[in-house]
Amino acid sequence: MDPLSLGTLGRHLQALRLARGWSLSQLAAAAGIAKSNLSRLEQGNGNPTLDTIWRLAVQLKVPFGTLVAPISVPLGEDGVEVRLLDQGKDTPQVDAYWMRCAPHTMRLAEPHTPGAQETLTLISGELEAGPEGETRPLSAGDSLTFAADRPHLYRTGDAWATLLLSVVYHQEPTS
Image (cartoon, rainbow, N blue to C red; front, side, top):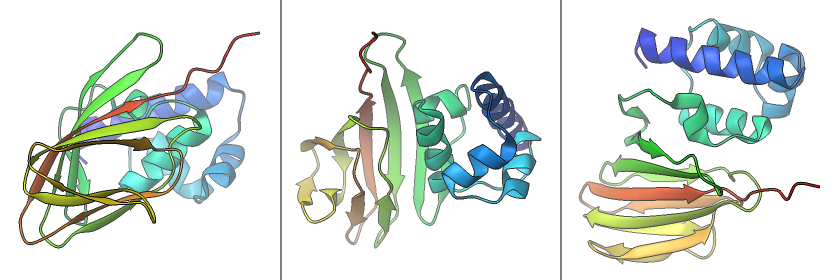
């Protein structure tokens, strides 16, 4: 992640944490990361994994895109690149992503916030995707929608896979 993107992520993390009245220790423990790592991220340093950013978003109860917007460079690791395309401001909140996976890559994704649904459309290549134990093979042009609030995976074959992905976040009813 470039310095500008790290700075953006850090500012968003700190503002959201403080708005909730949480200490560094509280958020770090809830997200399962070291307090020192969270402190470095808030200062615009470090090298967070996609899973770390997702875990922080889930604990802060915000869409992944809220932490990374307006970062326009692809975020990636271990053969997977993800780029936020747009973040809807309506209710329910919808984030749209471009994702590219290298050949022979398996990406295990942690659950998103409760009630989240993911829809992906495969643009090129072949992909197996969906909740663990319920994956489905996809070819270019195929789409799949599944509950993303449980562990799910993406697995490629012999070629790169490119897909468009949207996450619809469940809106908690107001009382």
